Image (spheres, rainbow, N blue to C red):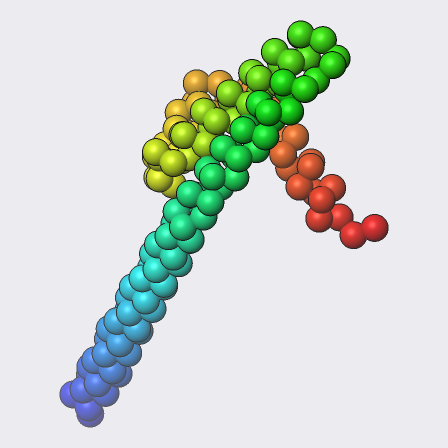
Length: 139
C-alpha cells in the first residue's frame, strides 16, 4: 500500500511538473509576442516620424523665408529687424537639423542635452507639461 501512495504522489508530482512547464512555455510565448508587438509599434512610430520630418523641415524653411521677407518691411527699428532675421536664421538652422537627423539621432541629442543640463531641462519639461495640460484641458 505504501508503494501505491508513492506512485500516486509521483503521478501528481509529474502532472504538476508538466503543468508548470506548459505554463512557463505559454508565458514565454506571450512575452515574446508582446515584445514583438512593442518593437513593431516602435518601428511604425519611428517611420511615421521620419515621414513627417521633411514636411516639417520644409514648413520651417518656408516660415523662415517669410520672416526674412517681412523683416525687410518692418518700420519698428533696426533692433526689431535684426531680431526677426536672427529668429529666421535659427528657424532655418532647425530645418536643416531636422532634414539631416533621423529620430534616433534626435533622441540621442536630447538625451545628451538633458544629461548636460538637468536643471534647465527639468524646467523646460515642467513648462511643456503645463502647456500641454492647458491645451488638452476641457473648459
